[in-house]
Every structure is written in structure tokens, then in C-alpha cells.
Image 1 (tube, helix red, strand yellow):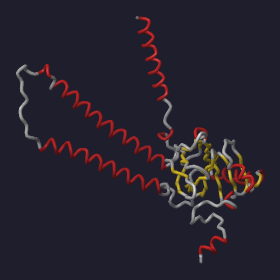
Image 2 (cartoon, one colour; image 1 turned 90 degrees about the vertical axis):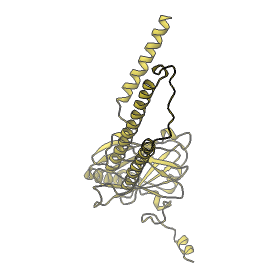
Image 3 (tube, helix red, strand yellow; image 1 turned 45 degrees about the vertical axis):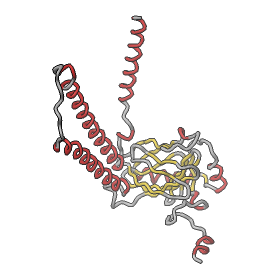
Image 4 (tube, helix red, strand yellow; image 1 turned 180 degrees about the vertical axis):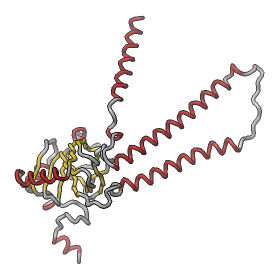
Length: 294
């Protein structure tokens, strides 16, 4: 019996140790490297503090009630008094939750407007436009201004706003770089926009945050933020060494499956434009424009 209890105790101790040691590794979204992610991390911690305070108050009240009003603490002939009600208690029970909800609503709405806009501090800079499209189970990054395209990796200049235009060649996915900002859906026949920025050079992990089939778990990509000069050198190197992206090659890349990283000159926007109706970088079909004008 003692041996069994000892084994149970050791197993519990090992489980607690593993949990504590695992907690030493910070959650990526709580280790922000950009203004959008910083805002969301601050809001998350604020929510944790508020909810913790509420739970603590409730637990304290519960403990007081259990100790002060337990049956063994009363006379055997005790009868509780008849109470009609208390305006003060009812006002507290209703008013405090209303105040909490209003406070959190204001914080949420304000933060939503902030993270949907150009990152704070980058309003006067020209953003780098990157088209990020997903397919089963890959990410394609098109740089129309630089006329290059990468697969499953993303290079961006640090200290510059990035405007991602998201869409999908398959099921709905969610573009997410936890250390730079929140996730946003990429959908077929629809283009969404996400504004991010990396304050300093560094390497980050990006992934699909929405389940999209059997290959979802490996639907990831690497992100590297670098100084603008280094980014310009990389662009020049790609034009000097990479092969052009053809329509046939792009159709091959869209086939379901996993791939490593690859780099091309040109973008698929030339023969497979994004679904954004007002995209200045999309190549529009003249016949379609003529048809729509009639």
C-alpha cells in the first residue's frame, strides 16, 4: 500500500514539475516584437488581471460565507430572520458586473480599431505590400513591387509597416505570426488586409491558425525581419539567381501536399490575380472589364 502511495506521489510530483518547467517557456503571443502584438499582449494581460481579481473576490466571499454561516456555528434553535431585500446589495450585484462589461467593451473596441489600422509609429512610412495566399498546405508570398515570390518563408524589412493582402486557393486558413500580431482569415474569392510591423530584426514563426485538413499541423512558415539595406540586397540576389515563376510551375505548387522553401522571380499575380477588386497590383482581364462595362 505504501509503495503504491509513494508511486502515486512521485507521479504527481513529476507532473507538477513538468508543468512548472513548461511554463518557463513564454507563450509567443506574450513575447511581442511589434506594435500590434504589443497591444494585444497588453490587452490579454489586462483581461487576465481583471478576471483573476474577480475570481479572487468570489473565492474570498465564498470562504467567509462557509466559515461564518456554517451550521455548526449557529445555535440549535437558530431561525434565520425574514429579509425583504436590500437595495444596496442588489445595486452592487448588478452594478459591478455592468461596470466590468462596459470597461472591457471599451478596451476591446478601442484595441480593435488600433490593430486594424497601420501600426502606431509607422503612419508616415510607405508600407511594403505582400500578397499572402495559402494552398493545401503551403504559403505563397508575392512581392509585386519587388517582382519576386517565395514559398513557405517570408523576408520583411524591420522598422517598416507591412501590408498583407490575404486570400486562399483552397479552404479557409488563418494567417498568423504570433509575435507580430493577431491572426486573420484568408479566404477564396475574397481578399482581407492585415497590417503588421517588426520593430527590430529577428526570426519568428508563422502558421495557419485555422484547421484546414490533414496537413494543417505542418502548415507553417518562417519569418525573418532584417534591416532595409539587407532586405534590398536579398531582393537583388533573388533576381540574380532565382528561376522565373511560370504558370505551369505555379499550378504544380498548388497541388495538395507539403513542400520546403523556394524562391522565384516574378509573381503569380501576373496570370492568377488576387480576388481583391481594388487591388492596384492585380492584373485584370480586359475582356472581363469590357463585359462589365456593358
